[in-house]
Amino acid sequence: MEKADTATIIIDSLRAQGYRITTLRCALVRLFTRSSAPLGALEITSSLEKEDVSVNKTTIYRELQFLVERSIIRELDFLEGKKRYEILSEHSRHHHLVCTNCSGITCVDVPNDLSSLHHALGTTHGFKVTHYVLEFFGLCFSCVSKGSCVKQ
Amino acid sequence: MEKADTATIIIDSLRAQGYRITTLRCALVRLFTRSSAPLGALEITSSLEKEDVSVNKTTIYRELQFLVERSIIRELDFLEGKKRYEILSEHSRHHHLVCTNCSGITCVDVPNDLSSLHHALGTTHGFKVTHYVLEFFGLCFSCVSKGSCVKQ
DNA sequence: CTCCATGCAAACACTTTGCATCAAG
DNA sequence: CTTGATGCAAAGTGTTTGCATGGAG
Image (cartoon, rainbow over all chains, first blue to last red; front, top):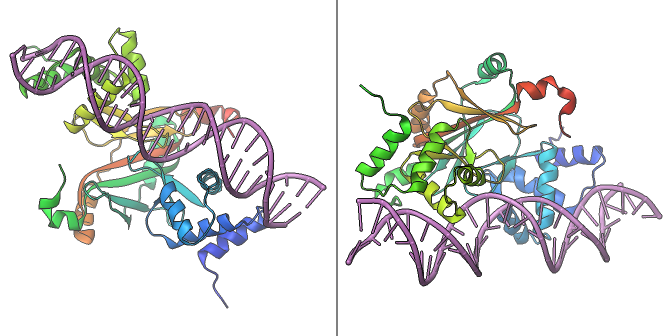
């Protein structure tokens, strides 16, 4: 029994829901399932260009919005003045280490379970948490090592 | 023995460090110590206008940068396409409930201590965490109540 | 008087909108 | 064919830069 890759599963699911499967949509889904780091719109554009996929920025933004609305990808923000996007995988305890020196981003699975907090917030504030963002900022291994190169 | 308010303490500290105490700088510090919610640059501008404080956007942005660099305020981002700023108080376990319906922001003190995570990340990834961001998204009490008004 | 702080205009970066055209189903 | 997807131009929003002027110390 063959196991379809994530991209194929997502695309089949979109097709099943009656959405049109265009070259761009396909390429975007494959790009996201392949990439480990969160991508900005411009990076996406240039990545797709390398695969000779047509790339109008308007269309990219619209397609990103489409994928976000269907919970296939999610938006992230690392205070860079732009949004980044990454595939929304099954495991939800997925966070990032953002290096404030080299801007490198590493994904991490954090063991802590904050689900008890959801309930706490529900009772104390009447707030119904749908999701949360937990991101760590600091210095990555290589920037800690070569301390002399740290900016500022 | 009189207890100086936070704004005064901050301003005195800036003065002691040799920074010029201008009307805007003063007004900004007071605004931040007074306000409970994180503020965007435009909100700040209009707030200051109400106090008849001169408000050029360039100056606002430069002053915000000045205060961020000196760790008096910090930047936050709630995926709105703009940055928000709030006073950086002594307690670090300060997070937010962001309502995805009405965009209301509530500050919360979260009991969980994630400091063990810092060390874990240090050992497993060689990453030195300087700070982290933990924000909750969902529906606030009033939006949960009047469920019918939920957008989309 | 000396610099830091400020205002103004313009530039920037990222994102969105309107509208005509194109192509997936 | 029909309707969603796309490209292009232009506008929108938030933020930054260059440069001359102004004011705190």
